[in-house]
Image: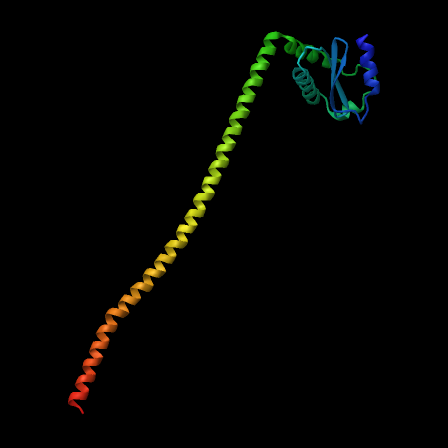
Length: 186
């Protein structure tokens, strides 16, 4: 019964069909994935994880792409041309159905989520550090501007104090010369 439903499904799939989909059929669900003109199909119980089913299909897709190139796929003329791939399908099926393997995959998925969370946290830290560095850069450039202004003001005040010191002395000496000149030479 499910074999005939699978054949009907293959006949109805075309280029406008979604690349990944799950179709419920009674107590079972058909999961399929289409990639590079090849349709990968799995039949699983309704309580079987969709994520695990698509992980299985993705594993088959990767291995199939490694073993066979697209030219060979396009030139297929007879049914069951890739029968040698069945050995890998059986091996992958056993590993995905095995409950220990499922637990291992679940633990691996949890570890991946932890790594992703750590990466997100690290990214937030990097962004915060980047904002801090930008703020620090702004403050440093502002401080540099203020120090130049302080240096220029200090040079100006130093010049004024020199003028004031020597200016008073020059005025006193000039007045003394004027006094002597008018007193003795006139």
